[in-house]
Figure 1 (cartoon, helix red, strand yellow):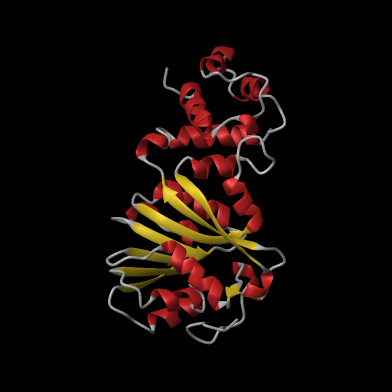
Figure 2 (tube, one colour):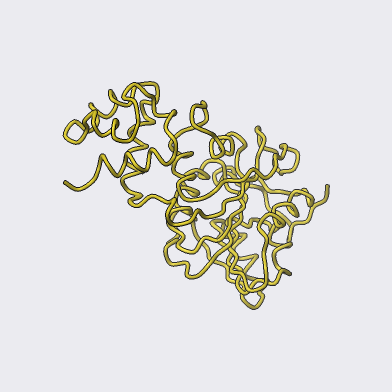
Length: 267
């Protein structure tokens, strides 16, 4: 284990959910999973003191964008310029993802408290997402990888798996960070699904899964009859081969997409 930070780290800010990686083996494995090739456009979310950045800097990318909310670290990175490197101060939750042109590979050690909404936005709003490697709380990683019928399967699972294939990378213990978090972390890799497997109307899917998983222990027919009385009919479920007595966690990702389109279609 060694400290490979690009510069001396200031104290981590609890308000920003900062836990800085300092294990070189872990950082190298993340970089390897990102598969940076010559000419790639690469973004790192929350580079902090630069453990991951240090290994990204010498790679053959055409553009490296560092998105950093902490003003201290944004300034530190900006003071170490490279051709093609750009530091963008700001919050990833407010970033205009739709403006990223061309294919992008994205990496980051995401703060636990905002990782889910951040990934929710990235998978559906980055038009040219080519690959992503994120370190997140292991519990969230389990949800991203979950299969229908399990306790970890929920709205986040369905949404993420509607846009990308999720691959399990590896699990990291608290000792790899400073300060150490109270839970294990995991690295997951996203690769975009082909267009025909993505939702035709993402806003419909988002609406449906939020309705369903807020009452996940109830039967679908009960949930939808009360939430969408003007739109729901048992025939909609029957046409898709779904039983009204099924609970939300038993539906596949594709069934959710099909049900969203059928339920919220313009009439």
